[in-house]
Image 1: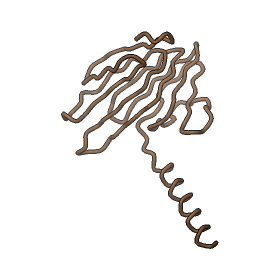
Image 2: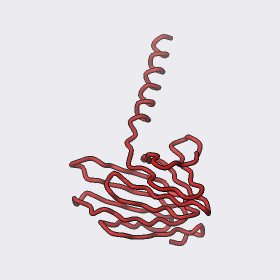
Image 3: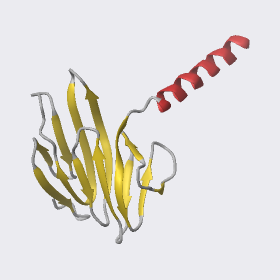
Length: 149
């Protein structure tokens, strides 16, 4: 019985450590209107300026909401009104390149992507019908609830 309790406690400690180790990818640098953020299985909560964003976070704006997110790589993303997006994946490690991807379920996203430095660097936006991969440019993409991009 003691060994089961120890294994259980060890598993909880590992899960808590993994949650704490989630790397900040940047922060919300500007907010307007109603914007919420949801991390993992937590409930969505109102976003705040200077709040960190991490892999797996959902950012949702209402009809009056907008958010500007500045990534640690220097890329700046503007999330438009009526938008739902998820930060899918990010690897920001020296030597391994910087890979970043966002899933845009609905709404609009504009980004000023900082110049990517190595061939393994990437910045991708996935919509329900397409994928946009860019390297050091300004671009915008919109996804409609009808599946249009």
